[in-house]
Image (cartoon, rainbow, N blue to C red):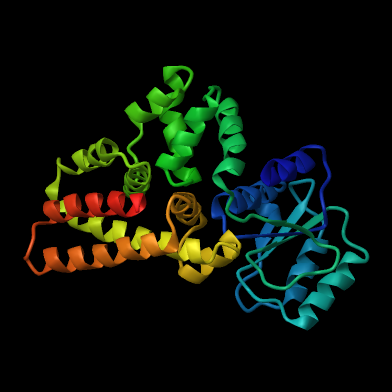
Length: 311
């Protein structure tokens, strides 16, 4: 549990002279960054301005703090030059005991740095974090409810935290609580719909569509997003040996929908997925040209997907 490992080290006073905080998961990296800033007062914290030489940061961090136990100096949002890296490594040979340098969202590794790189977690890896966060907030959530909350919010930790704030006063958070109080993301409905089709469940698929009936204008973007998701399933099936992070980056999507697409694709062969995708393209063209209503296109898409899976 990377963030809590980081926080535990700070709590026991294991403070490094230089940290590098980065990674694609901004929720956790920003928490870690804020924790490092909290080591000092505002008066004893400096952020190196754009274009200022790294030597200015080294000079500043060596100054004795005025109001705090530590001086914190931040170098952020830049690519370090080789000469700057060497200057930082020279400083680390004899760092100031009261100083903490922070490299935030900064390219260039420094020998001797303490690095924390926060990458997107999988659904399973995130569950313990949500359970722990609920306890820290004075509540509790069942394991299955945490997984449902993660799915409903597409692993968005900011939204997860806000939803926990809303539900914790209600008592232990169960699956039923999540269903009653958390609005599934638009993409989650696509996942739920696709899972139902993969199971061959007409009733499950139509229960998702019933949520669109309150606003018929949602049918068209839902259909388009569904087509995109089927295409993602096909890519995931064909590139089954490519790591999630690498494939997600190549396709321009976040890891969560890709992980869901991989699971959904397990129920199909590549040929079946290609057949469904071509049918979806045809139906989308038909309703956009006015040859068929979008509701009818959805009905035909369901039937086509379920029948393709059976062949």
